[in-house]
Image (cartoon, rainbow, N blue to C red):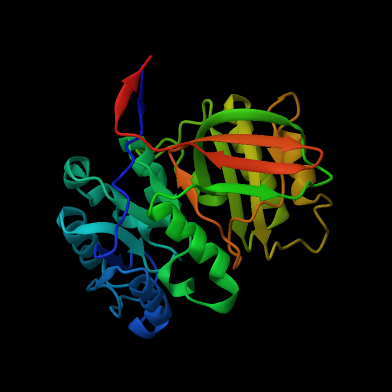
Length: 312
């Protein structure tokens, strides 16, 4: 038996959405363009106490970040909650959040990068969420496509992506629940309450500023645990600002991935527009999707959401 994740109610004009800092600090000016964009969609925006707060690098103390997020979770008027930005800090507070209110009153949670930990935890609890751009990055000339995919996802419009072929893609087709996010964050969740079940998933991955050897090390870890072998499909997003050693590691991202997926037969696509780039399209974590990788390109199509149900 398995639980199909709950689809939160889609947004409508006039709804209230909240913005809080789960991780790194910022000021209101940093998100002003994002707030303006959300308001242009007909939404009311509630600014959390953590916006403008500061505790070393964090958007306020752990206690304040917990309180701010908790209040928004428990407020039935708030229909969606954005993390203002990523950085680091979400895992510090994750185990102290009471998700009972979310269980009674599902709502969309949006973010990426460090927020991967929260999105995985929500999937464990049986809730869909959005790996998508955040207010600090929204409303800019080069983020219009990312912003529009987020709007479509939040308002329940069709979400389908068609991308060019990549010479190192592995062809095939698969259907499965979409999960994933920042690769290093996924590795830090192993054997915690937020750990991801990889079985039958279409996994998407991205990262920024990592060493090639560390990418290899994490994939070795996942392969040794038998997790990569359980996938239905693999979507490789953007691995930006990669770093190498004085003595080069000698393999590209694509070569590293294909080496550790040897012996499997699921479809793999590279260079998908998700990650630390302006074109960071919205991905519905926990939603069933269809991945088709052919010689002419890659398509990723999301199914319609549904209320929670148990299926055999």
